[in-house]
Image (tube, rainbow, N blue to C red; front, top):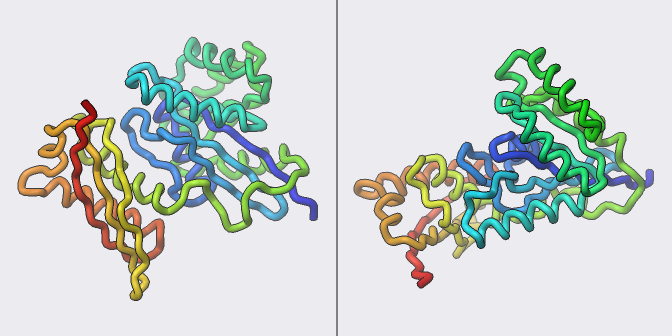
Length: 283
């Protein structure tokens, strides 16, 4: 059977559910999910192979980038537009609870400049009456840009099969870009670093410094088939160290245990995680 392919870019505001959707489609946690702003910073790619068809998904940073510092904003925008430019079609993900016509219209006109098919996905339909989405569809349909609409719950895995079936039908003949056993362009080191970053974002709430970095210093498979991982939490402000450590080291322990559990689940092996906080002076 001749191979087919389709490249899809997921776009939308932060917390619309792009990362949850891509994880649901690929059935692995390859993209960080967190309610904090701009948790997806990199252009993350997920791959779904069904029979002779390869679907490639780009999970992009959220549109609302204005509050980022200049350097980070440039990186986020570059990653977002790389995903858009490399895709065949666009899935515009909207949080059904936060629908705003003016914002959606502005985004759709911007996306339309790329001259690529745009499909709107109303996410989180499990949290409101589905009939309320019909007026949204009617309103956006008048703009005459979007090709079709979907209503799903990525978290509850509702409507995902319908989107996959639709995308499979849009595929075209081409050689695959990734091997049959590959599900992402991100390796285990990146994904495990993201697990720790996610734990920090979750457990530190509003105190979290968004300019931290997680660096891997050791990733080793042991003889007993366990995995040993060492990571450095890079901070650029000394006062963050006390916040991350917590009283008597309680917070860093909580971060480590949460991340370790998630990593063990993803790698399907017992993991031993070691964390170190390192201050870097950028002045």
